[in-house]
Length: 416
Picture 1 (cartoon, rainbow, N blue to C red):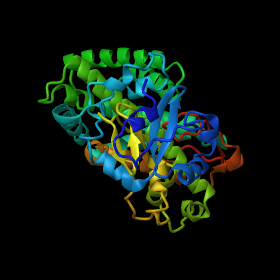
Picture 2 (cartoon, one colour):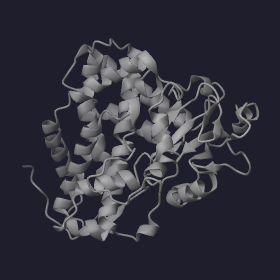
Picture 3 (cartoon, helix red, strand yellow):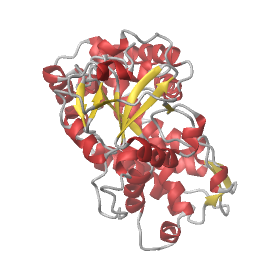
Picture 4 (cartoon, one colour):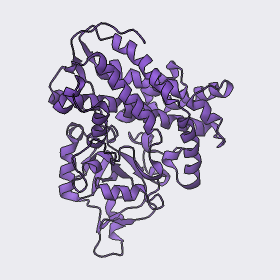
């Protein structure tokens, strides 16, 4: 495995510095980082500036980009910062916990050039086929029985009882997954994000998606899987599997965490707590603020320079991950203005050729899920103090382990 200093020692520009390797790298997978990442970003910025030496897992070095302008430059330069990890992963052991999330797959997120264009055209067309009016009704239909399952009790754990089952059921429906197959994919995906038994999680996902592809080939329907299968890109079975794995990964964890992180803001910040009972700031305002301050994918958008490259006076080594910290960049004091209402300049949907194509779908699902919940239970509050909440470790996501809430018991809803 390459070390950060190797490219720097051989670089011909005398005044440029190799990536700093003195002292321990910052461990993005540590519980300490998960507990207070914003303090960690401030300390990183004070010591390193825009480019920070980190470990994604034990023995897996990377560069974390926490400067907004530097990140935008990298995200819009796929020639120098391609997304293909195949050279990097040759040196990575198969049981590495971050490998399933970063390894090469024949899909747009890990491809460049003509292959990237082919994959992106196929899955963008498949996503654009989702009817947003129908989706609104789908979210409501799924949300009501979930809310009814706990609204009379006066308490709930919002992740396991609402945010996860809702995003899971909505995604299954728009992708075309039967519930049982979807459950296997979701279980495998959580193992990958948590970095625990990730290799087994990867195998579980692949097997379930292969079953779906076989089913949809025989009996297509009005869903993303069927539209992908019958797109003019003529995706192979292997390519189909990896497109759907990517859509699942992008659809459950990030949306679940965006729902929960937004509700947390609305329950703990007076500007939004008032809005639940008729204040001035809306769910969409809270959603946009969370996308700035605590995005559900905090560090991602990974690229792998083909050769040592000089950026911001620092030499980055070839074939080593360069990870964009959406959270760190969004909160960069050089560009931060502290105003989030009607401000969409954050990087939480990424930017450039790999920008998220499902933004409209995600916005609708998350906003409708929150509105349904708070319309029924407007006096909801946290059951514990905010500083008692526990955040799940992991280098990529910003995710609570649980979110217990209490509220005055309310009678069940009837579907409209």
